[in-house]
Length: 558
Image (cartoon, rainbow, N blue to C red):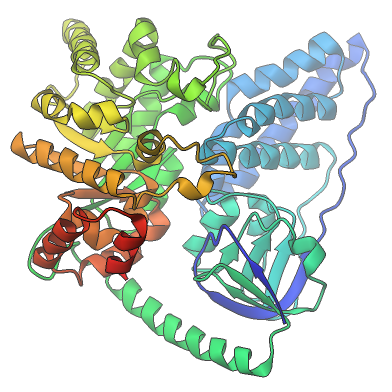
């Protein structure tokens, strides 16, 4: 028996079955140029492929919201303009123009360090393949596998996964991809165990090898012995029974055994994500990443474009939705917004710093959010705040926008709430002053942990030092929550740590009122939350905050 240890057990669970290897066909792109008289016809070919893609994606989106996001992208006029420009100005044939225009967008997303944004390159690749298939008259064909297959692939696009016979697939392992890839989203939505980023999988596993995929311990067992097989059969039975109980509690309130209510929210990046998240019967959206609108466009989104997106998200949500203002810079850059190369972009011109300096850009977004607030319960969240001055300046600009809309007779929520994303050491230490002016706090543990510990989580050599259970991080969370409560505002968390099942009891004890996470973690966190004593959680937090090492913290949590 051979055992592979895996870093990204992206969808927890246990799966057992034979390995089935997926080998996609290699795409060949026509390189010929077209003459001036052929350009109109090539443009028509492209438009026809778009029209066909729209019909295909409309049907697919009814079963899987992922394709709703693809439908929005394939309709994007900026993509159309880029392709048509390459045909008309460079003489490219329609296939080549589609390939090149999409490749430029893919390069932008691939260059980002933010995992969520990096994975959006897969969206563009899938759209490109669909358009190219339509141009070539090709169709997606279902992959054939036997019963109880563990699918092994280099990578899978959303269209690949949509073509899977999920009655036969018991688990998925890919060589590429991260924790926010569509493979993971699909797998979690179907409670299908999955592991991604397993670099050696294609070399270590052969067709028909018998595999056990252990998503709880991050292990792949290749050709296990009989004793191991029996052990995992029993574990699988127990986990299936637990999952059934969790699903039965999805519609119940998120409240501790002694009556403390904790609001559960979801983190999303698009209107389609909102639709999917709200199916979990939660309290709303705790983080709507507005930068996705900017990153998926080749121009600065207009006020009207943003308004329509925020309005749709608010209506789909039907409950409270928190829109984070533009958070670019660092690993996320825009091709149409000039940014100087920086030695350390994560400590440079980014997030609220860009918004306050590029006032027109900021006002366009704020006006759009305000207009959308007439159609739902919207909160505004400001990222990367380090001082009271920044918060006051942002609120001043917001008031300007309110005044303009009032003069123009445009409706908006006059009592819209503005909060601060606590993600810098400065905002932790200035939490008292910020709480006096903010309407709520939401702790972004991804960046806060990185900045507090001076650890680049993208650096594999020191990544092990990145740990939100570090005493400095835990004490900071408590400090922020206490400052918030002294001023009568909520303290929440929207970082990955909020969805860590080992941390739930501790986070509640530290004083958090809200937890916002990836939708896939909501059922498990709610299930755990409903079995926690708030009184015990406070005692646990008191004890943990006296400890000096991560090891001591983990020992007390086990």
